[in-house]
Image 1 (cartoon, each protein chain N blue to C red):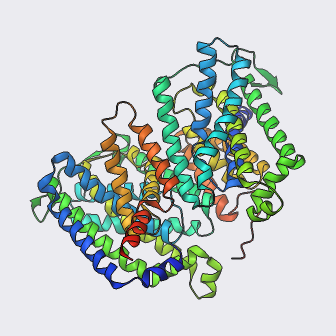
Image 2 (cartoon, rainbow over the protein chains, first blue to last red):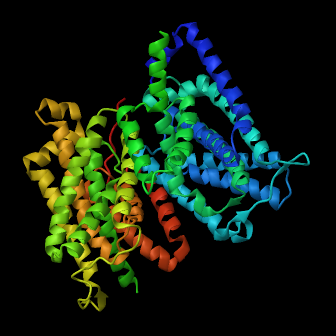
Image 3 (cartoon, rainbow over the protein chains, first blue to last red):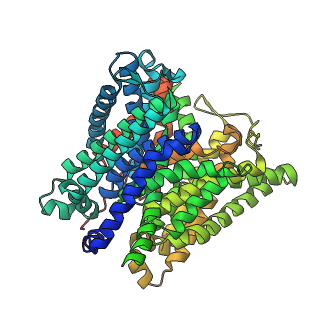
Length: 324
Length: 290
């Protein structure tokens, strides 16, 4: 999103505001009621969508706003998952506290990764972050006494304040966390940090001459997006109840990046749409005999060729056409 | 011992370099990191296998046809998928190539299944060369030789032919190149064609040692990117040397550090190099004025 587009958005008539609020309200009510209407597997998919949307929100902050590519988000996701799992299972820390501490730990790692990444851009940054991803994944794999190595880690159902959290409970927890994440992302992106990052993306020299400390903001962006990924990882660990290092490889990082681009770079709604596309479309295609990969790949290509601004960008353009 | 490791690393590095050169030609002219490059090469290699296995063509003919197939494949993909994306956001185009990667992979899976095939090589059973007491397998020598031929041919082509000059102009500045009468769509198609061609050569040379299946090029693609970044993406020589260095480092790290940490060690070295030289060892730093 360029600054010009933001000005256009800011000057939109108030009517679209109430429309937007109504839309958000309807989505929220639907999301709250969803467990009544779907079976167990459907609920799993919805929870997974929420978890991936959380990662995409964080990554979009980094890629969409700050213009930095990251191919190590699967590892942040994995470190969050492992930290939460180990804290609850081996140290007996309560689930929510473990989730938060795991995420703070990963945030620190994210900030450390950001430091050597400061001077790099584009493919160079992609490969450096990919390298960090490989190293983190390897550490998880080789630290057998703590993580169980390649054998993975099986988890019991989590409990919050003495009550065991089932699938529905985890769904509502994810929904609550995602709503909080959404609100946080919305606030940060419209605030000082978000605006600073947009300038940095367009031109670091211009940002510098405006007194924006580019390095500090980039590290902040990395840290925030690592935090989102780690929280999502902690939820994911207890959604699937079995984690192993193989699940957090480069492929997943690339999927996260695709979600953000498919949904729409630099848009908050796009993160959710992109995550939903990635989780739900392959399920719908499962019926097609031996060609789900082919159709999904074709869809990726078609979406990018016809909607280079992503699904959300397309929807917004259509919506804007009908409103004003 | 060390000499063996170095030679093995050089041979592997040459294979990375071929994929790396294919990637870099496309990257420099269209700004698109082509994630489908590996699968394009895999498809061309399967085509060569099919020519030999079903039509009974001899190795040389099958491989030559497959290399031409790689060229045509590159041009067709550029025309159908990439051309509409020129001028749009670069990340969108990159994700499109990622989609293409999935498409080509499942296409090959549908045609040839997911089992592993043995790809023949005319050099497999020749006696190894011995240079200074170090035995060197013939296919290593072939890999290194072909890698050198490609890099020299590409450099000459880009430096001394009109088309090559157009490609270099387009890689520096699209607008100015256009003003001088260089067609961006045409140069982009040529770049994708060349990428497909070099990729096909790499695929045919890799297949005998890694065995042919639909995931033939997956690991190689990442290594090629990493080697290219290490050397510096804006010169062919840089990519070539970076990939060689990567191959040798990997071999030495797995022998002297630890086999299971070889990949991680290599990446730590790459990150360390990039913090000192953010555009790779041989890369020139582009001065940004905006």
